[in-house]
Structure formats: C-alpha cells, structure tokens
Length: 151
Image 1 (cartoon, one colour):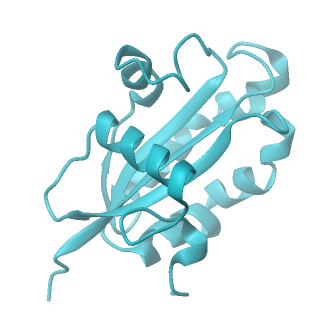
Image 2 (spheres, helix red, strand yellow; image 1 turned 120 degrees about the vertical axis):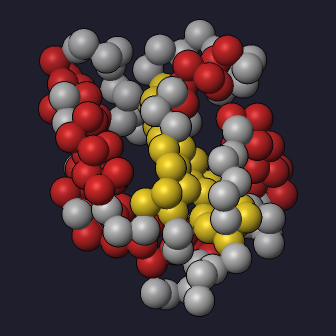
C-alpha cells in the first residue's frame, strides 16, 4: 500500500567561513557527492538544490545578505528513509563533524512536515514551517526528528 503522505525536510546552518575558504572546504567540497548519494537513496523523492538562492530571492530575512548560511530542502517517502540517509550513510559522518564547519551559536536547525504524495513544497512553505516551529514549537503541522516515533 502506498503512503498517502511523504515527509518534507528543510535544514539550515551557518558556515564558519564563506564558501571558498579553506576552513570549510572539507564540507563544501563533499556537498555534491553527499547530495548525489541522497538522490540515489531508497525513499528519496525530491531535492531543491537552490535553497539559499530561492530563500534570499523570496526575502527570507534569515538568508538575505548572509553568504555563509546554507540549506537543504528535500522530500522523502517516509521518516525511516530520511533517517537512514541522514544518520546511516556518509551524510551521518559529516553530520557528526558539523561543529568543525558550522558556527557555534549561529542560526542552525531543521523542520519536518508532512506533504501529500506528489506535492513539491515551495521555499515560502518552508519559511512558514520554520517560522511556526520557532514561534510555537513542535506541533502536528511542523516538528523535528525528536517528535518522530522511532523507526
């Protein structure tokens, strides 16, 4: 039976230095390979690939004028598929080393929400979810990995 919904995932973090700086080169240089792995992973549905550019163009204050803020925006068939990619692939190794590349105390986080199968979420939708999560905390409409049942 096909699920009636998929899970959208938007995450962001502030690099310790601008793209092109040696301090973040290990991370930045791996992004294309890690993204390609996501696209080949079981349960992968969609990935934006233009997160920061779209967010800045849409006037999202978090992104406007911040050349060190990066983001990832994707849709997965299930929380289990997303978790497997995030924590059990090479992505997990980079995730565990994130303090090496991302500014401590700077803007960083993620938001998850359910979308109907076939729906491609927009950057405006992501901003609304991130803002709701920040203002009201986790809910049925938007949440974090901590609110997902173990899978």
